[in-house]
Image (cartoon, rainbow, N blue to C red; front, side):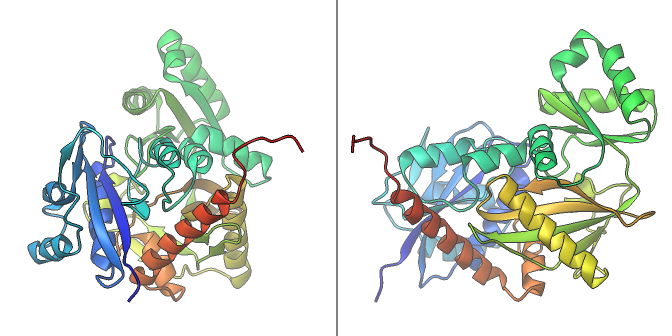
Length: 365
């Protein structure tokens, strides 16, 4: 009998998306095969403390049933229990890490850099792709260089707003007009995003966004269908069928995504075949533009008036419950949730093995 893989599942984190991470991690661990994996839960509190093994499971209460928590306890190696300021990650104790962390300190390259230094394989994008994908201002520049069409936008620092608010407001009104969307540059799950229809609302929206990030992005309003494509793979990624979001609110905000449960996913999206293929091709181009690996969800607008496709953003660790759009897109593309989790772990190990072949020394020939 082959040795079971020891998979550390990281969840929680110091992020506005802490709760989303708990739900995603609960689904991931529930899908793991007891015969294939030993699970090492590692919870990160909102204060930044690390909880290992059974000490981490109370964080998941309310996200999964007690029977499932009991099952997870049976899948845990006995050696990983306790509370630590920072856990010791050892290659001989952990085969691969599944960082189900969304947003700040999880999806932005910080935890990925730590795992690179620890020399441990991990699921998902590397340091560069994570940090570029997280920063909407930087990723928009990268996508523009790759020739991918996008909506008009402006970006600036919170310091610019403090120094000369009037100049910032005038620039937004001149270049974009109303309505417009105001976003923290480095956050996901629609946290801190507002739609502004006039100057008063714009000022409020800027204050909200700047409470979450030092960098702000403001985008023109595009009357459009919101369509998403899931990407899976490393150097030769594949794209899923497109899916459309029909939001229960004025736009697809945090409440529409996670609270009221009234938004509708249309999978596959009702699109002409050539449009669907174009979306899939553009999703892969976006994934490769940031040097993605593992997984990503790429979000698009399709203009209602012209049918033009505009790239909105890329998410390198999208919501990952079995009911999330990413998982549902692959389910409709022929991959079950459990198979998706298995595939991502396999891709992480393949990427690690490939990187292990690279030289890290210098010797004169």
